Image 1 (cartoon, rainbow, N blue to C red):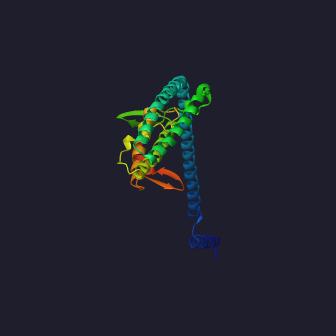
Image 2: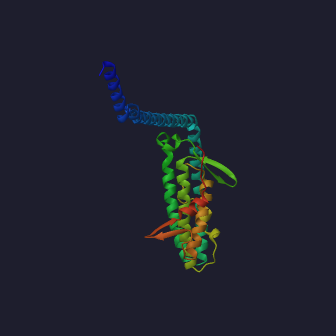
Image 3: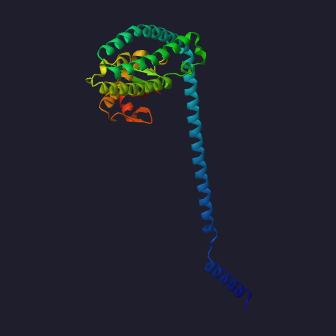
Length: 269
């Protein structure tokens, strides 16, 4: 056998071996390349998420700085308004003393014993409020967080919108609940006296200052929402039911859904 024939035979054998085994190197490399691309995609996604979080945090910081700046600009105006609000409320409470005495005398004349007892308790609590307000003569406004929070909510009364912060909204909500509680007691008293249904005749409804301390919102706004809660509480108390609220373990509370329907709050920021 010549050398040429041998070489051709060897070449043929080599080709056959390659053909039988197959060139698997490029095919095997594909999964590795795919895996690398997946890692890159994941890294890009993580980077985008981090950028989004950083952007959101930056926006929150800017909003916080802006709110602080607005608060600083208006802090003195809020302080002046708060002082005026307290002064007006002190005068109003002094005027109400005479009206309370007249109402009490009328209840005694009508022999409405249950309503008289309820009203005396209401007046006593109102007197305690007056004592606390009189002690605010040297109030440190610099420590009142209300003055450091810009308005972020709005509510309506009489077709007009008013802005306040979380402190104001919390106070109005407590006013609705306090109104419901006092209304329930007044309604129950009239039922016990067998007196005709009339929540407007109640001194508590007319006064509507129970739970108000002269801070954060104007008195007329508080009075409005207190009366809304009072009317519903009076109905429940007079008719001995729980349509608008609950009474358990000596605690009265208006239903959250009812409160939300009375005081509609909208975020402004």
